Length: 160
Image 1: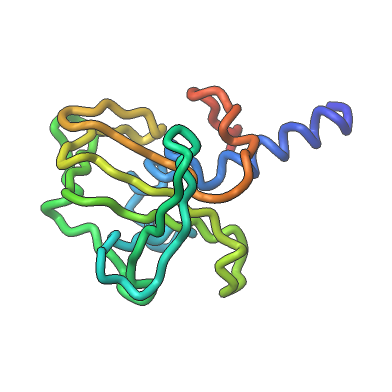
Image 2 (image 1 turned 90 degrees about the vertical axis):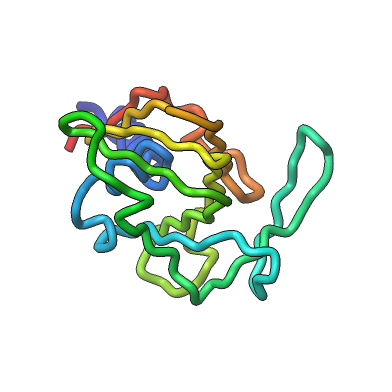
């Protein structure tokens, strides 16, 4: 493989990290909490905030949360089934999904996404494919940069 192609593939793998599909793949594994994702519940009274710009509505807003309050996925939120090799995720409200890019405690070394199921549920598989059962799914990348991961094919999966 030539160096340009190798460099491109390495960039694709790096950009895949922290995507919704990567999140679901890691969530499917029993060792999710050993990975680099962590969750925080969006709360109107939260002392911490992330600014989000909605270009469609040409306005911004602050998404408030408690940085030090981990959101735990209980057995009622994340369940096995309904079929073999499937899991179901269902919750109300919105979650901030942080993906730690490196081991630094600096929040600038994180990617942050907003996950909202609109009181619905989704079923997902080991490979990160999913289907929304009820409600609507919103996965919004928060940040000021358009990243390559927005251009990755939906079925992209790095060779592991």
